[in-house]
Length: 291
Image 1 (cartoon, rainbow, N blue to C red):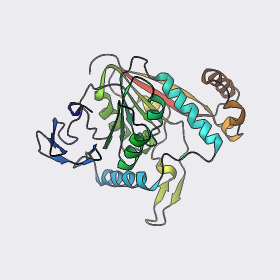
Image 2: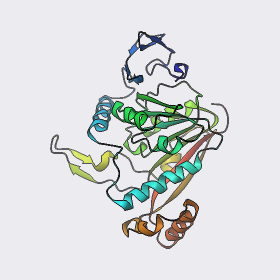
Image 3: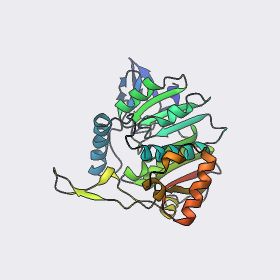
Image 4: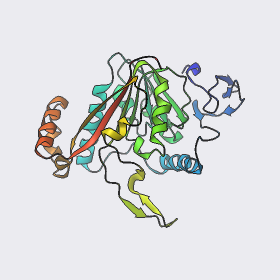
């Protein structure tokens, strides 16, 4: 991996290799390498104490849960497959550099491993990145550990950035978008997916006795809320809403799983015209001029 694409997450200065570590040319901070994987955690956060807890939470989350484990429920597995098909259909064919933010179980690396694409899997968990590179060790697959609110990448590096089912977990979603957009090349696309109009459920935590959202989902989004995350008129916004919840609940996957993606899209659209119960939204933020 070309370290010239990486920057210090704290001061955004260039990094250099020094004694099998990375060192910031400006603030002199040293970053460790874990099996050649850069660990580029920020030294400080832009917000309050909640963000520090957020970092520790997802580092532990990546160690406790196996993001690479297959789904027991086949209906859920089919639902995730169609969501990923939708995202893949929106990646520009001309994209040569792609960033996967919150790469988790590395489904994108699996899908792109035979493509001529330079892919950067980026996650807060060293465990997830290590497994991703172990399972999908193609030459153009790189792994970086860090925080999406302090991304350690040079501006105007990527043709496409994908972040699937991440934004609902982020404490400050508007800051999340603001941090990612400058990393795109002019004309680049940021593709975000999240549950559509999710009704967030809570339970009482046995440790702190406070309400805790299920699946650690902090926000629910629709197309207006996602569009309102951008203030710049030079960023184009599109959205795609799909995935009929009734079909999912009725376990129709045993039939629909055999449909090609385009035919499934038609079937899904008809189902939502009959009973409007859409479950997913994918939005695209596109830079139409140089920021």
